Image 1 (cartoon, rainbow, N blue to C red):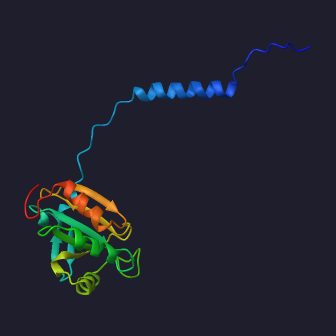
Image 2 (image 1 turned 135 degrees about the horizontal axis):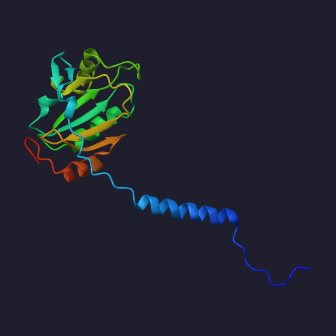
Image 3 (image 1 turned 30 degrees about the horizontal axis):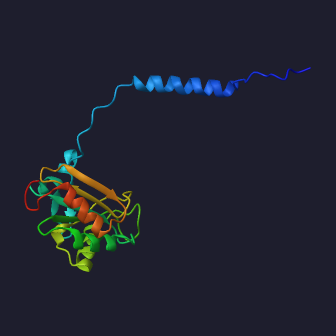
Amino acid sequence: MPSSRQRPTLDRGFAIGLGVLLLAAWLLDRVPTMPEAPPPSYGGAADLARADADGRTVRFRDFRGEPVLVVYAADWSEDSPAQLAAVRSAAPPGLRVVHVLTSTIDGYGHPATVDTARAWARRHGLAARDVIAADLTAKPLPALALFDADGTMRFEHSGLMEAATLRERLAAADIAPGGGP
């Protein structure tokens, strides 16, 4: 006959799980932390040559000495024109804005050409020197990247960013157009 006084028992699975969790916490506490990596910069990309909308060769290093907002776009991206409008509204006077066309109207796997860049520049009233054709067909669009005058990335964003948010991000990055930070 069972006793009316049963001792509480600890479920074996619970006990094993708790032990594994405590062991993992103890081990993780002993893992050395990685040193903070420096922010991305033009780095090795400084010598990569691309063509602008007039077919002239442009290198990332050509932008050293001035802060640059890079806008990645493509004709097939429904949000790219909206991102362009937000950039026009939010970018302070004097900030260099460079548009990088990543692909043709055919989308992924069809790299942008000089003709793609030229058509984008004309359609949106942009200077040919500010529109670059690139083979970045896998880049999520639209996207933004802000580099300071030394070529160090200050922020990067994928997806549509509204003008008010972009204005805040540019102000927080403390980049002085036409010069250094």
